[in-house]
Length: 118
Image (cartoon, rainbow, N blue to C red; front, side, top):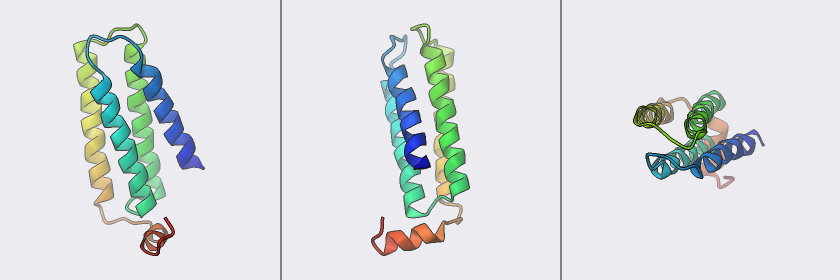
């Protein structure tokens, strides 16, 4: 249930920030963030991510969504802020990759995915 709540929170932050007018097109940023959230959830469901890794990565996604929402509050996103958000997403992508491939596994979820329970 926690997975669903945090996914919905981040998705709602993305949706709320997508409607504002901006100097830069944030549609690609929103698409990247949505894709990253999907990767995190898939990694958790497959057992590639432990609960702790999952929570850390979702907290990072929430911080990025909050940064984006704060930047769009006035209806304008400066070039500097746009690049800050992009850099945060690139760092998040590296974190997702490294946590998914670090060898730590949730073996119960791995077993479930191998036996058709997920």
